[in-house]
Length: 156
Picture 1: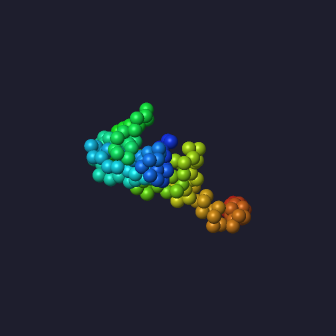
Picture 2: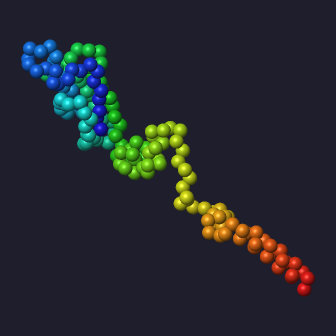
Picture 3: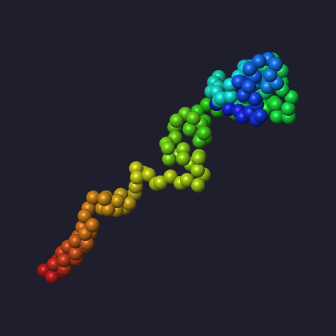
């Protein structure tokens, strides 16, 4: 996605006649040597990048295609494109992150809750089963019964 921010650019509707002082503007985007013009201020999706380094250049131009002289006019960046990347941003764009995982991007202090579906060891599994499925006094009854049965075994 290519997005940009223009500062102090006049609205396109400001120039109603050619005599108006508000000049029309456009943005020329050049990607790996191929140029195209943008006349609306909105993000666009790009495709066709080659694996590895690609360069993107943006220029603020007037209605006749001439560069508007200012210090911030030209901006060029190198973008490294790695298809199937395993970084978080790549997974987010492909829709491979859960909501909980994506929330960590927005809030750096966010910690996802531990999953209930994670594999458990034998002891943890037994404890969890007891907690969820057995009545609360089951363990106490069982302990009392086992003590009584042990006493009976020794007194016979």
